Image (cartoon, rainbow, N blue to C red):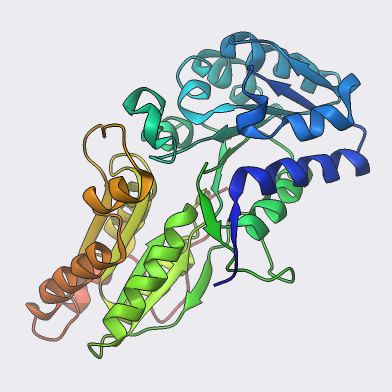
Length: 338
């Protein structure tokens, strides 16, 4: 892994670069420009940048109007406020008419650690994932963030882009391929699969390295697109390893873990563990909170060991063949959801 880069810095730089290439790009901000880094775009293009103040509902409504006139609005504020105080127009104006608005939720998960539970977004993906027409993406490093910004600008329709405040190691090279709806297998393994989203990718890789010292080969998947989820990749992991662990800096209810469980329950039930929030967290150092709430490499490795024991309890390491239906391993994969 490379040098540490703040996701928000990579986002601000990418948005400015995008603005240089496309005059339809406009930015909206709820008075936290120095935090979200949308101010980088605003400084370069003040005529296309609107700071509406602490008024998330109005900001999202304005974005809907701008989209109807042909602009591509990038809406910026903390994820927790965007998906709670801005929730009504997100659903009733933007998603209902599938408007081309990009909702960029910063400071996701526990990354706004010192401001406490009121600012920590652990339910945002559950809200946006349940809304029809909405695409949901969480990025793992600065390179993937830049790729995602350009990809969602090209994508027609509403997108929720989830961005961490915390610095993260640069894992991907500039030539990485980012495709909406297609997860990335970053590490091969035959014993257990770790499916993660966002910056937890790095701890998942570290967990896999810990397990390797014990002779356990863990596959690691960067599921950057939580909706539409890459069903085929999930099923490949289930077939290959027979045990799944999901890891997300979000509630275990309604986010990545739920999305993966839904695919497995319908097509290929295998033992599964979900790592994520089950309660609100307190204020504190980000790294210490991550360890306390089970997001550290050793905690992830421990959950991998647990799910492997459950797999081994089946004797063969797989569930009986009849439980794999209606997914047919000999015919092909399920179709990707729209």
